[in-house]
Length: 387
Ligand SMILES: Cc1cc2nc3c(=O)[nH]c(=O)nc-3n(C[C@H](O)[C@H](O)[C@H](O)COP(=O)(O)OP(=O)(O)OC[C@H]3O[C@@H](n4cnc5c(N)ncnc54)[C@H](O)[C@@H]3O)c2cc1C
Image (cartoon, rainbow, N blue to C red; front, side, top):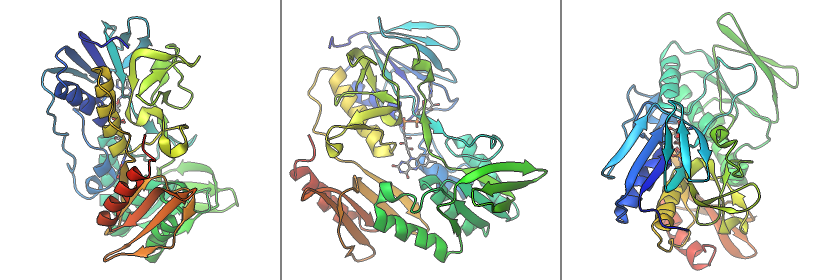
């Protein structure tokens, strides 16, 4: 790959876009850095949107930014990418030629057909809408989709005395992300606080009739609610890449160095893809590409892509840790909780479950026990799961 010395265009003003700019400057890149962000705001953290921001107004501040001399255009979206050049076309008609492009356009919330007026949670504006509803007179909230966001919204609603029902088609939602043991433990925390759990029950439709919602389940039951929020996972923001020739079958496919790959399998020279929008091969999946969709992975991707862009050898790929909060407890996940599940190991304030594949540690999930996870992170690295 030809090392860029002129202009690098970063598309996406989230944490991945911001941190790649910082890392490029940190590695001494002295060319021009242009950032394009569809949202009106400077990059802000999304994890608080389903936590602190639901409890008090204005609970989210912009991210600290140490990258000097980056020209950001916020409120501007990229609408096309031409790999030759490469060049990016913006929605205001500008065509920007560059030496390299970093794709960091993230994902957006998936919705259920017919539920356009239901709440969802991806942006700071979404969080303010949810907070305002929960701050009103408590009623019945139906949460469609029992993912991390559904679980964290259930916490915020119960704390404000809302009656909460969580509906999901799966039997143990979050088992793939947290492992079966901790997923079951998490839903028990909700049950213990009075959350109604309706699992193995797909939603057929959700309709607003006057001010009330009617949520119909496949088994014929109808739930009446004052508010509905969908937490049905996310869709990569790749529509603007539709004509680019990149493989965008589920996010932007990359190689291990975060270089984008075309639909015919060629690595596209100076095009990188990072963060939630990227589908990257992982040592933890035997090289199969997956989308991680979590904070530390987006930051690690950004650092990795920057080293590759400036022509340095990227650091070893270490399994990242992500977290979710349930009431007063914090769950942290290292690597992938797949394979043989251990018995929970009790800790001083929580417990830890480890996962082994072919006798090698591949993941671990800890409840209120970050110290144990740090030890296991060293073990997983020594075990050679990392590249
Ligand atoms: C409510 C919520 C809670 C979360 N909680 C946690 C948590 O507790 N722990 C954890 O590890 N992770 C959590 N996450 C996930 C974490 O926030 C993401 O992994 C991270 O924000 C990904 O960063 P990103 O920069 O890749 O994408 P994003 O943050 O999505 O940023 C992408 C940006 O690109 C912009 N964009 C899109 N299309 C275009 C275009 N065509 N042109 C220009 N700009 C464009 C978008 O508007 C957006 O501003 C949470 C996410 C949400 C939504």
